[in-house]
Length: 536
View 1 (cartoon, rainbow, N blue to C red):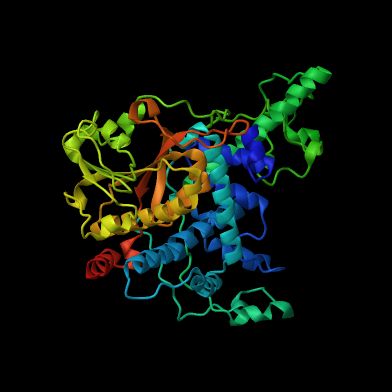
View 2 (cartoon, rainbow, N blue to C red):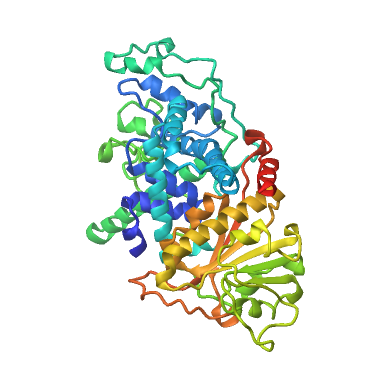
C-alpha cells in the first residue's frame, strides 16, 4: 500500500506496473502504465483523422500481424510502447554512441547537450512521433524506478533486460527519397488547420516495427492476462461485499444462461444448449475484461461477476519486500569456477578487496584506491595487486602510469565500491559518470560483452545519484540487485538518514550487463572507438 501510494501514477496504472514487475517485465510494465495516464502519447494523432491515426499506429503495431485479439485501447498502448522502444533503439542509441566517441576524442570540442534538440525534432517528425512525450515518459520512468529502489520489492532481485534490445540484429533504414503526402491517403479530406502537415516528409520504410520485434507478442499476451486478472479480482471484491451485506450467493449451475432467451429471441426451446433459467450464470462479457471496459454496466446481458470469470493468475498477487542479506550474496558476486580476473575500484581502505580474497584467488584480484595510502603488510593479503591514487577512473582506462597488469579481456568482474559521505554526493556522481563511460568504451572497443559491472552502494544514494540512468546511457542495463552482506564482505561507514515508512536504507549490490548497440545499424563502431582511443 505504501509503495502504491508513492508511485506517480493512478491506482490502476500502479497496480498494473507492479504486476508486470512480478512477471519480470518491469520496464514494459512501467512504460505501459505511464501511457495509461498521460497525454499526448508518443505517436502523432492528427485531430479529426481517425484513419490517419490508425495508419500511424500500424507503422509500429498492427493487430493483424499477431494471432491475438486485442481491444482498441490495448492496441493503442502497445503501438505507443513500440514507438517509444523504436526511439530508444534507433535515435537514443545513436546519440549515446556519439557521446562515448566524443568522450575519448579529445582533439575535437565536446558539443553541449542542446545540440540534439533540433535533430531529434526532425527525426521524430520523420517518423510521426512527439519528442516532448517521449522525453516526458523517460523522466517519469526514472522517477518510478527510483521509488521502487527505495522500497525494494522482491522482483528487483532479478530484472529482465528491456525487450527492445531483442532482436540484437534489428535494423531500420530510412527511405528519405520517398515522400508520403497526406492528401494521398484515401478518404482523408484535410482541414485548413492541418494543411501545414503536407510539407512534412515521412519515412516510407514501413512498418518501422514488425510483430516479431521487441517481444511484441509476449507483451500483448502478458498485458491481456494481467488486465483480465485485475478485472477478475475487482469483480470478486464486489461480489464478496454483496455476500457480506446482502447475503448474495452466486448461482452454482453448470450451463450458462442463453442471452437470446433474455431478449426473447431464442427459437430453440428445450433443445437449446444453454439454460433458460433465471438463476443460471450468464456468459462472460468479453468487453469487461479489456482496458476500455463494458459501457453497458449493470444492464449488460453478459456476466461481470467473478464467479463466471475464470482467470489463470500469472502473478502472486502479493508485492513483498526483498529479504535481508545472506552469505549467498558473496557467491553471486564472484565468477563461477574461479574463471577470470576481478577489478575492484574506489576501495578506500582495501576492506572490500581483502575480504574478497577469503573467497577468491588473491592473485586474480586487482584493487584500486582513490588516494595514496600506506598499508601495513600484515593487513593486506599476499598476492593482491594494488593501484593507488586513482581518484579519476579514466586514468586507468587510458593507461600511462596506471596500467592493469593483465589484459582487459581477462576481466570478468569490475566492482565499484561506493562507500561515500553525504558531502561527496555531487562529486561522486561525476566520478561515476566517468567510470561508466570509460568502462563502456573499453567494453565496446574490446568486445567484452560478458563483463559484469557491479556497483555496491546504499540504495538511497543509488536513487539520489541516478546511477541506473547513468549506466543506461552507456549501454549498461541493471540485471540483478540484492542486499549486500556486510558481515561477510565489509561494513559500510555510510549512514544516511533513517528511512521513512516502509522504505529501505541499506547497502545493495547492483549488477549491470553490457547490451551493445547493433553493428548492423551503426556500422563497425568498435573499430572507430579503438582508433580514437589509441590515437590519444
